[in-house]
Amino acid sequence: MAARLFSNRSLSSTLNVLKHSKIHNRTYASEMSFTFASPSEVFYNQANVKQVDIPSYSGSFGILPNHVPTLAVLKPGIVTVFEESEAKKYFVSSGSVTINEDSSVQVLAQVAVPLDRLDPQACKEGLSKAQQELNSASTEEAKVEAQIAVEVHEELIKATA
Image (cartoon, rainbow, N blue to C red; front, side, top):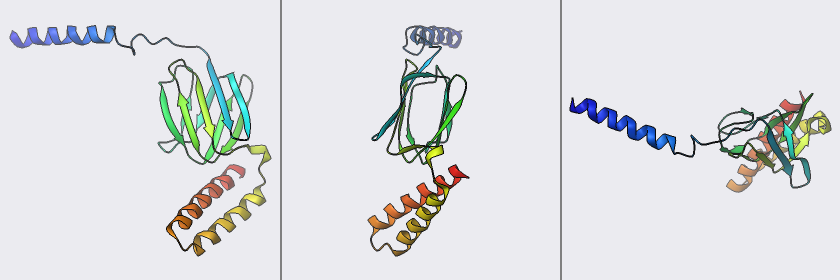
């Protein structure tokens, strides 16, 4: 009987906490305000979009309105933005993703380029150069920088394939 009473009080207390918690009171948006920029260009500024697919170091994921608030680090790859009637693709080298409680999303990339602006041959040449730099690197810093360049160019080649 005591265990049952404790269990009921515990449940009641838990339900009371949930009833007044911020998670329970979260409002849900039907639209998603999206901002996507790099230091050299703004692609979207508080635009309403349907979905955004993101490559991150914790795994690639899609963002829809009402997504749980999240912070993520971009990895080299393709960001796909689904507008009303079309999907646009961009290559990103690195950066951050912020998904806010109000369903707004910010993607800030170190480098971002629409896929249609990429030159597949230049990407292959860049990979070759990065691999040469990696092989000839004499310091740890030079090796790390060259390895990053190799990874970015490998993803660029995948993006243009």
